[in-house]
Length: 197
Ligand SMILES: [Zn+2]
Image (cartoon, rainbow, N blue to C red; front, side):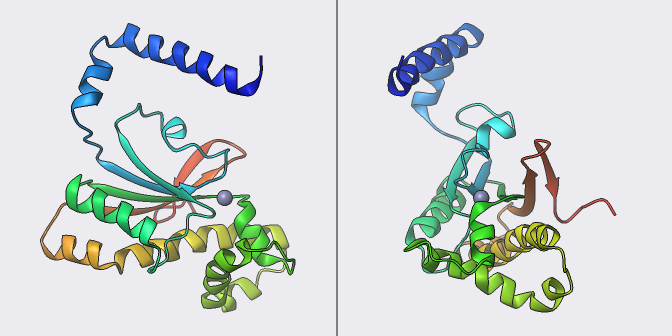
């Protein structure tokens, strides 16, 4: 069976399994979506949003791009945030980066990857903001892991600086913004604001 045929087969199996558990599931889904979480993550195939937090369809509004970057001029990302915050009234925005991120790694080495280098420039900016700290880390992999973490923190700062989030908080809308990192080596998500010593 080729990959595309497998997709249709798997989809039928999944839909049946969902219906077996909750016969009204798709009917409810067809009426409205009411997610409480906006997930902003990396496009990496190893970090599928719903799967790693074990939440079903309908629970998470998702935006993914290479290295989970939020740029103030990115109309796509801003539209997602605006819809999630203003219309869906999500209560949590989660930026979840991951260790071993190919986008972060590519930004650390002097090689040419074409168009994507322009996107990775945003991560180079993050590295420049934290130059003092990063320069002290001589081991490449440790520095790489730290940049994966710092990138999440900076993207959270970017989100907090959007007019969308600023206005929501000014209006006392219930909204928390989280900086998480996922480890592809053990499947565990950690809160960057609450890392063990
Ligand atoms: Zn990545």
